[in-house]
Each structure stands twice: as C-alpha cells, then as structure tokens.
Image 1 (cartoon, rainbow, N blue to C red):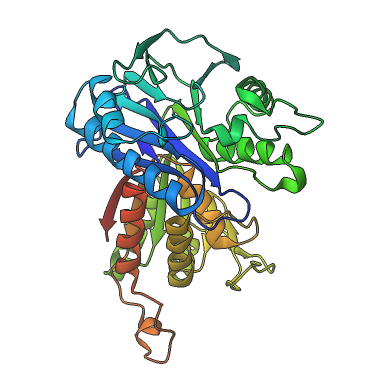
Image 2 (cartoon, rainbow, N blue to C red):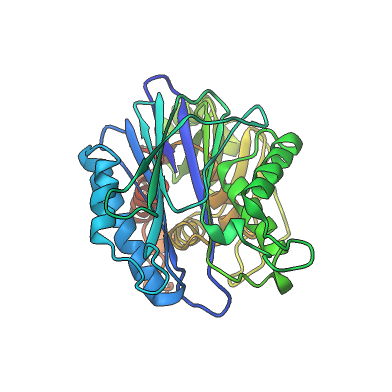
Length: 397
C-alpha cells in the first residue's frame, strides 16, 4: 500500500496476520483508506477481545469507526473518546472489548499515531529506535483506558511498526520467553533486520516480524491472533507492466522505444508482446524451462535484457489479481507470485495496455475464467489502489 506526497516522499505500507491456532477467523482487523487526492492515508489495526468470530466482529466495528472518524477530520482524542463510549467493556475483566492503533499520514509531511491498549509503536531511523514524544490522555469515564497520541515528521527510510499483543506476548510462559517476545524483543529484532537488509520492504519486514513471533510459540502455533503493520517512508519506486501489442502494427517501433525509455522497473506480460519487443529492441528472449509450482502450473517465465520479468499474458495476470485480492504468500518460482511481489514492492505503477485483440482468447472452448486483457487490468488496478493504496495509471496503445 503506497501514498504519494508533494515532496515525493512515499509511504509504503504492508501487513501480515496469523489467526490464533484453531480459529478460522482472525480476531484482529487491519483497515486502510486513501483520500482521493492521495494526500492523506489512514491505517488502522484493531484487536478484538478474545479470538474467533466474536473478536473479529468487535475489531471490525472498531476499525470501521476509526477510519470514518479519521477521514472526517475529527480530532483525536475526542474521536477516540467517542469510540470508547460506543464500545462496551467486559463486565468480568473490566477491560475494553477492542483496542486500536491508528496512523494518519498527512500531506507527505506528518504522521500522527493514536493508540489505545495496543503495544506502543516502534519508530526506527538508520536502524536505531527513536524515542517518540507522546501525549497521554486518560478517559474521564474509564480510568483504565488511556489514549497515546504521537506526532512525528518522518525522514526518508524511516520505519514505523504497529502490532497487536499477539506479537509482543508470543511465547509467553515458555522456557525461552517466560515473559513473551515483548515489544522490546520486537524492537531488537527490527534493528537486526535493518542492519542485515537496510532496504527491506514493508511487506518483507512485516512477514519477518510475524514469522519471528511464531518461532517463539510452541510448535509455531499462535496462542493469540498476530498482526503487524510496517510503514516505510521512501522515494517512490516506479514499475511499468506492458501487456498486449499496440492496435496499429505500424506503431510497433515507436511503442517499443517508449517502453524501453521508461525510468523504473519494467515487466512484460504476453507472448506476442515479448516477441515484438525482442524484434524491435533487438534483444534476445530466453525462455526458462522451469515451470511454477503450486496449485496451478504456469507457462514458463523468460528473460530479456532491461526487464525484471517476462511472463505469459492473461492467465498470469488473472492469477496475479487473485493473489493480491487474497493476500496469499508468494511462491518464489511462480511467475504470477513474482509479479504480485513486484507490484506490492513498488509505489507508482503504470499499465501499458495494447488494444489489439488476441484471437486465441476468443475461443469459446477456453476456460471461462480467462478474461480479456482490459478487464483483467482494470481488476488489478482496482485492487492495487483500494487494497494496497498504490498510485496507478493505465495507458491504452
């Protein structure tokens, strides 16, 4: 998920969740939204009391309210007070039925974080944890409910980590972690990650943190719902996906030159498309014989100088959309998963879509789920904007 700013400092956001062992529904909820002008991004992590369906309903209700209040511009902690008034407290344990962390990124300059009940955020710069000035507000109605409000001005390559207590308390009671992984353990692990790989993406970092928390649990079975959100402030990473030949064949040379001149990472999706670029750019196309592994077998990927990935077209694009919609973990040798990872790891994505009809896809005997190219691209465009908060652009040729 990514947001553009006037200063061209982007916010890369990604997350990872694992449900409590034995539960089908996750009791934590992650939600996000981006304003139409791209200047404001809101990310919410809510943790419902307990686990399973009941916790999921409570956390979802909390996350939706937090998004609405943030989008309306209502000031915290007043909005948080309203949310706590709506949410009941447990009559036995006398604690809130849901906790939350809300991060609001405004105009590419300011990040405000509002927290109630969740572990405190971790803020890192140059691999070191920074102390964040925080104002603490006590609820007038409930003495045991406190709201922490922090406001920071991130610099390029700064990181912020938000988590539920399923991360900080993982492994609690075990010989290795009698008090749990703890927030301090998570902060130390984040420093190790950044030391080993300073340019690690938000996606990879959140996956690594949850995996580390899982390693503290007996048999890697989560004793509570685990959620982690990582925010990475960085210069924008641009990606162009080229699929389909241009409508007019006499434009192939100019079209190929335009593709080649793109400043950023380039991907080709489509056999005919790759053949045209091979011819017009006089580059050799080398097909890999290793096929993808997993639920489906894909046509092999290929290599061409200047392009990060070369794949088949409609089938791969359709499967990529499914992966992004379902937030599936990637399979390294799967072309669709590799494309999904590239899309998630970039910020500004351009689809260059050829409008020449591929007659092969008009055969009624082909599987019903093979969609026409433009329909698939619109599907990808929607999930990237709405679920991952990417900047996208579609150019038809």
